[in-house]
Length: 290
Image: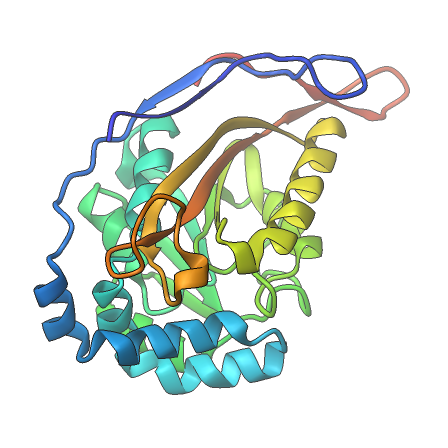
């Protein structure tokens, strides 16, 4: 796939300059896309899979969304495999190349962990200390069966805080849960709270037409935290081939509905260190290097 993305200090709207260092991540895809025939064999009728995933995208009420995920949990992995869902592998690739130190030493929180697809990607890259939270008990049941997490907790982010003290994790990921009816943008600071100073936060969201309004609100939240010097952005990586589209209205321009993909984006941020200054008030400090 080549380079994930590069970011360097650049002018911000309204003046000023972003703090940060250039980050260039080599994110070559390690596995080929499954064929359409293989996808159909894994997930049954592709039209049925598209209908289920499309239905999940269309639910904006949180209680209804969680109930849907509880019932979907046993079929979730095969359905998203049929749609060639790439977000877990892309996010973990992005995180892996930016996180310093040996992977087995890092304590990772997988927020909205679902059935554990992100944990499977993390373990394949040597990460062993994994905690997960999700708002769906059905999804957590599937995640527990994988045996990859040291701790799993039921938590509906946006309605309750994460069950961890401040500054616990070397990295926090949230993959596939940033959309209407799932995790609200207002919950993003809670991810930052449980991340260690200098720790990483990796987020993904869809950029298909039905999610663009949410993405706009999300990016406003991300930018506000950066302007407040709570974290610095390292990567914002747009990806065209995110997963197969569920309807022709969602297809990336220039592709056909039959083979078309929706698009998405991977964000990577680093939490700033906080130092005490005169008068005892904390001051965010710029970071150098990875």
